[in-house]
Image 1: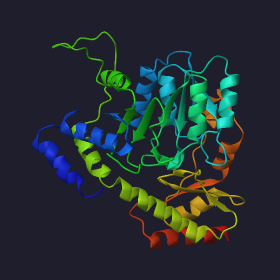
Image 2 (image 1 turned 120 degrees about the horizontal axis):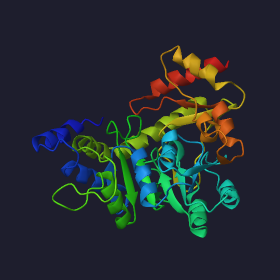
Image 3 (image 1 turned 45 degrees about the vertical axis):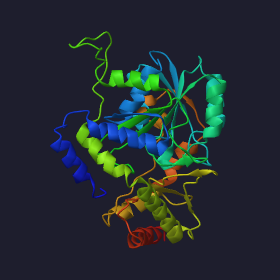
Length: 357
């Protein structure tokens, strides 16, 4: 927390806007618009809800094929199942660890029918190769949804992640660079699409003095109290990004001399928010490192297990090259909280070097 949250929460209580919606929700949405330069934003209960609404508004339904990053969290993919659509997983490239544009071409051409949409994840706060991906979506007339849940504040050629597609999605879950404890934001250059998403997010209530429904919707809006936390968090976003990037550089300084360690790369003309510092070991088993850290009460985690490797999606459409599998087998997420100091990073790094020896 930045320290300013309680003041904004007090404002929400004093105005008696405790239930969903209220002045803080509108203020939080505006702060996202001001920061990202997206003209439209909608505060929601989660980023997963935001992805679900994006698919619904774009008309994705039963039997439609949705292309998606495979190396990601399941929350990026489950909304496809909500809509009874068919996911087609695309593996990563080595230069960004994000969706491989060359495999995207293969997936489009080999799909049993024309894909309707693509959900591309900006993994661990790093942008995917957006120039190539946007061009392919335009060429093949495929809707583009950016899963920027982890990448708020990251830029591609000085433009904010989440602002290149038909929709962008941000997360404010407890572990993200900003948190409202739980929550998400849907952004779009298209006002009519955001208005439609707002309609579905508030139980699809028609414009009438009573509760009238010609369609069904969801209870997906963010509460005014949580939005108050978000307003305060947005005021320190740049400070958070600077600290996250500093932590990453500290780890590189401490571990850069270890030949078998390689850190997550960053594409040219991009600036990631370095949400998590992630690395891979070319020879050692990362789980040995994880257990060694755990014995010292230090939490680390494996990299994401790709969706096409999950039992849930056995036999699913997939275009793979083995990159995500290799990253999962050899990768580790290190402690990256913004409260960390150089001494903390040095301690973690020293234990990693000791475990490798």
